Image (cartoon, rainbow, N blue to C red):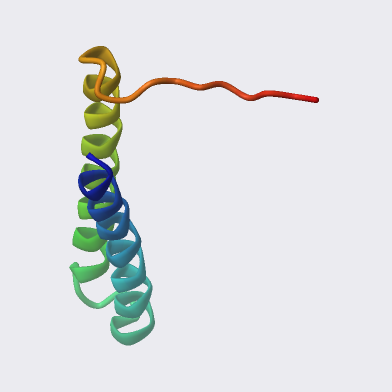
Length: 68
């Protein structure tokens, strides 16, 4: 469970990093940055939906915050 969440989160970060790389290299001449950002949005939505599903099926529990 944790591995899937970490892999999806790392995918989001890698996609964001590659978009920054393409922004610096291509300077807007190609669509590579837009595709990298599209992948980032898609992976973020997939991660969010997976977390909702995992919570609904009882695979993960919300613990809340404890103060004091």
